[in-house]
Amino acid sequence: MPHPARPTVTLHDVAAAAGVSIATASRVLGRGTHTVAPEYEARVLAAAEALRYTADVSARAMRGSTDSIVLIADDLTTPAIALIVAAMERQSHAVNAFVTVASAHGTPERQLETVRLLRALRPRAMVLTSSRFDAAALDGRLLQELRAYTDDGGRVAIVGSTDMPFDAIRFDDHGAGEILGSYAAHSGHRRVAILAGPADRVNMAARVAGFVAGLRAGGVDEARILRRHCEVSRQGGYDATRALLADGTQAVHAVLAVNDVVAIGAMTALRHAGVRVPEDVSVAGVDDIPLAVDVTPRLTTVALPLQQVGADAIRLVLGERLAATHATVSGQLIVRDSSRVRPGAPIPA
Image (tube, rainbow, N blue to C red):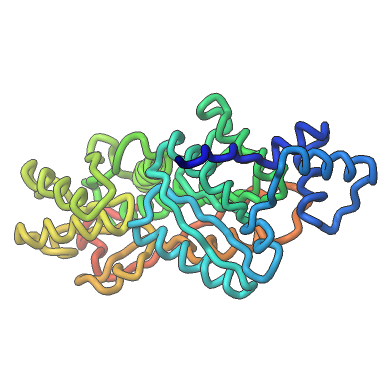
């Protein structure tokens, strides 16, 4: 008859029994470089022995030459995330670390569950990427979990907008949208369709708001800006454009998509309907994924420094930090063959 499994004893249990902080227990049991008062060291060692605590093998390995860094992303299938992950891996390998990747499917509940599970692996650092991380989400439980992890000696960096007290890098999504909206307006496009993605995606909503701001500043009437919500995928862009075609393409001069994948789906739908790009309709997106230069016509886009952000996130979690850094990175307009200036259209000075 099998014996029941012995309950897992955690570092938290040892710290509580010894009456010390988790960081102090970690320093004693991890044989770190920080000095611990002999009294506290004796209490921690006695508690560990009484509880039969065994240090995690992966935690010991972490202090050697094979550090582990965890990336938790909403959706690992997108080309933009692929670029970020590839840059993270390159930067990590340069310092003999390796990256473990997990998907949280874009919900706070899954993000919390994933962080809890991966904490057991004792990685040296975690990088979380999503459109938005709120400190108050789930009554603050995700923040508490991440704080417990950093108290235990881990490091956290966030790629996305957040009010959490960790290192963070965010994309200026509103600015990227505004760049593209302004370009479309100053190219003479006066009837513009926006493929907006889901209404609840914070980064996509910011890009849409930027599109509208740039178009309005360039003289486009609000009434001539159409919005179509869609799935953020090639199929989403295709389906939304097919619906747009049913409304009559004669009313549309340009299609602005929240990212390049949606824009490529839009171009496919236009081509299948016999609508020429850019002669009849200009199309543009955001991100500048590699496929943007492989499609025909080549896609006009706002390039975001995805690979730079991936590498910088690793530098943040591996470097010595005295205080959390929140940085914002901007995009750059890349004009290619999928857009044009409309001949004879009134272009603002």
